[in-house]
Length: 456
Picture 1 (tube, rainbow, N blue to C red):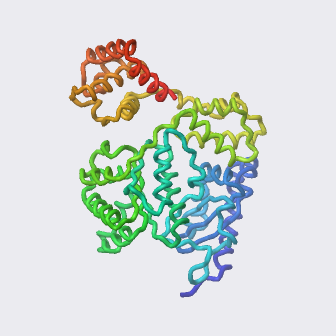
Picture 2: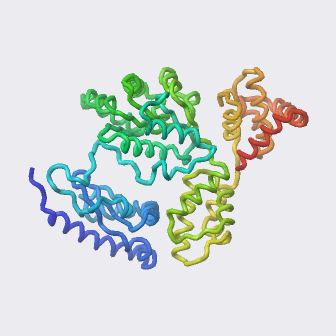
Picture 3: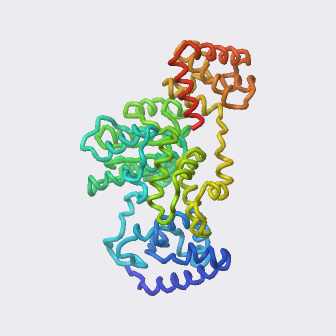
């Protein structure tokens, strides 16, 4: 096969880059361009995939440019030089060493990655995952599955809301497993991609190739399994893939935004198989964990000085997700660098005005039902069921009581959210819990704990 001379591709890339830089400086203004995009350099280009690396001097700058200018960079390259179909913004520390402008040699180059090996995010490792009460079980289980010679559970099912760290743990497992098992076969994909590739294999009569690639994996990682809900043929293949992996003694990790028993539209035999392993949840980060995450993140933001009272302010006010908390820190650091202002509470309130407004605690009834169900170890569906057994009736009353105390919803609204119950049922529940709190110390402690968790 003829291989293009480096100059035949390098020259257009460099010319296009000069043109793109001029356009960006004009569109964004000299100050913004000079502060963020001027230090960018061209990295490796992979002709087969059309992927070009744009290299920034630090991880902080790479994160900022990726989130704020990534789409603009991609569109500019596709417009000016269509052979570039994808742009990756990376930090210099993550670039191949040496980092050639082009990877064009015949045969596998030392710096090239096997296209079948997952491209795990270098930031997402166990070393950078901050552990607290909300995620301790999931983090410990993930590390055990990735690094131990033998494990007593398989599969590992990790569930939790958006932005709590499921994807971070999935990538960390991949990094650690590959480091421990050189040459092992690892497959990582979202459930949605599983479905798309399976359907493509059916159309192209290549289901055997699809099955072999997944079922021969030493470690299979599936993200967001809830997306195959209601897809019967995909679930059939998914079930057999799970069985093959587990029966062969290989390892399987699955993530979802909810627990197996709360996954609607998933075949019962899949849910049963998932429950055979270890089910680990990641709850919303509490104040202590958010505080520690900020401290850890600041270590990766050189030159950003943040006093303790500001860290405390952020930990208490940005509560929606870890992802949003990290984004807020990046924004604060970037604005401080651009303006030269000292980071204090007033500065943070100005920079994060929209974020802080969005994070004002607007506790939902759904959130209360989830938290109470987890606390009392019952299915969330029991909150709306007709069962009157004490083990579900009392938690349901607690959830109604908290809904009255912590939300602005009317009694009829609350009743409707609890299985269409009458407002008099809610009144009875509220009065009953108020009465019991005065005489039952354990119940009173439960209410206090749940309130702190919901408000935290």
